[in-house]
Image 1 (cartoon, rainbow, N blue to C red):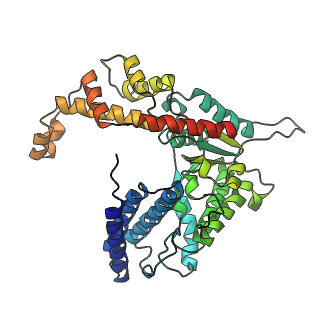
Image 2 (cartoon, rainbow, N blue to C red):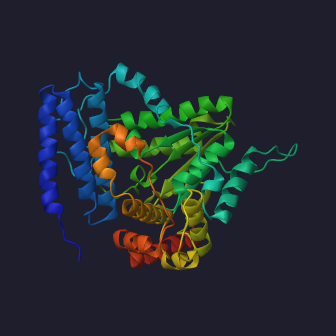
Image 3 (cartoon, rainbow, N blue to C red):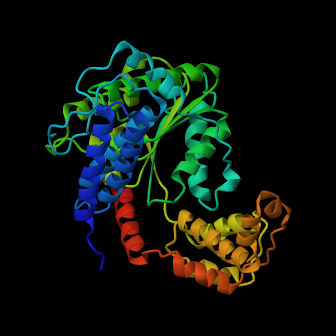
Length: 409
């Protein structure tokens, strides 16, 4: 039975936030940055003990805001801004560093902030084990959008896709591979990049994101990937969303619907990912023309993933791969990666016991040392299984929930 540690965590969280505000009010930016980073970590831990999914998402959104403020303080971008108000805030709202509207300098920095989200992906389809039907479905969706149409014939394409499924099943990797396959400008958007401490600024960041994506598409293609979109688009009408949150949702709906750019056929593909599709606002869900379920890997997919993690990395396996595939039922791709990495660490540690001693001798001594390896044994994997625990019952129940949602949508 899990022990509820939310009380002690909340106490430490309140202390960390108070310290951060005090440091910022005193103009001690480095110390304030460290304190806000700690606040973000504690808020993330506190989110794990939320009683409802909505509360968890809101706490994680607050953690993202604390992290963003810590980054700005560390780089000196908010050195001239006052510290957050110490008065109590309504529950469920995203904390703000100040209540004032952003300055012209703040507004002019939005484009730079969006440009920082651009990432050149090196992921390829071959690096994704299994999911053959899913990969084909994605390729077909954007292929129909890009292909030349017969003269005088209008064919619908899919420019907005939603990937949903359990955590660790490769949603981000699939989006990155899609971008790389198109040689596209890839905007890898985390929720914290769009959540702002300033009233109304988040909606402007959303608009700027799509404006820059359209500009970049002049030179080819843009892929806007929004991870954990449910944190931005919780269902309306629950009574706890703020006015700023409603504006962010309205802005995103307008951008997804193309209301700000009617008649413009420049190539911008929007891909969103979520672990909780049932938490999405219905209006947002309806904007995605293609919804693709990314399931936990079946036996064939697990075999392919293990081949990539073990064989392509230059390792060998002593035990039967069939036994390993059978034993990892209900594992996600991320779980498999953790398992194999742990087994490799066990093997390397077993064969290279002198490494800590060589490190003590200095860099030159350790750089001269050649690490030894061998095939991964059943014992290596056994120790890895002991350390990498997967809640199989929970995974099984989650899979049922996703398949029920997929059947209804």
